[in-house]
Picture (cartoon, rainbow, N blue to C red):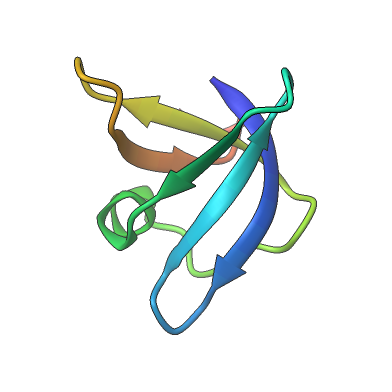
Length: 65
């Protein structure tokens, strides 16, 4: 799923993403750490990968594999 970064805390490495349907999804520090990214900016487009139960496990840029 894809959305737009709504919040991102550089200290805790957690944040929220606003999906295209208007739903807000939070992501944990582990999902950000799995991305290999160094920071996110508000309004940035991201892709969220999740496990079988819907927990976000990785936050990446849509152009990255």
